[in-house]
Length: 114
Image (cartoon, rainbow, N blue to C red; front, side):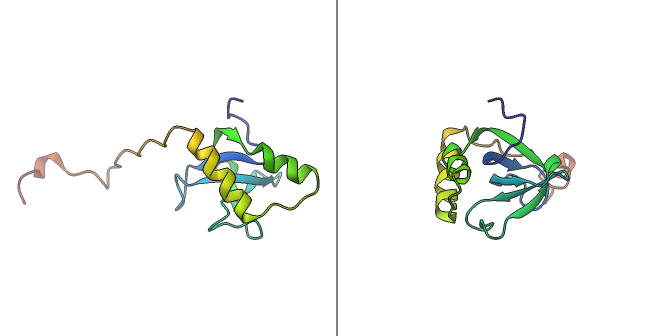
């Protein structure tokens, strides 16, 4: 899987908003350009976060065990979501730290003048 297409139970990273960099599992696609995402902790299965698909970056991993459970009509718990999210995140390389933006950088002209 190349990670380019977002589908249910895929691991994604938020690329915009307050939760930028946070990893989620896609619970379902809404069909209107949005997805419902969960992390089993702050965003539980009973209260998923609605996130614009343009603000999600798909990662090359998916929770096949959770997809099988939902296909069989079984419920998925927050503990299972957390366990799958932790296992999938551990398989991937760590996220690179974001570069300092213009507001976060020091002015090189002022270095040493404080």
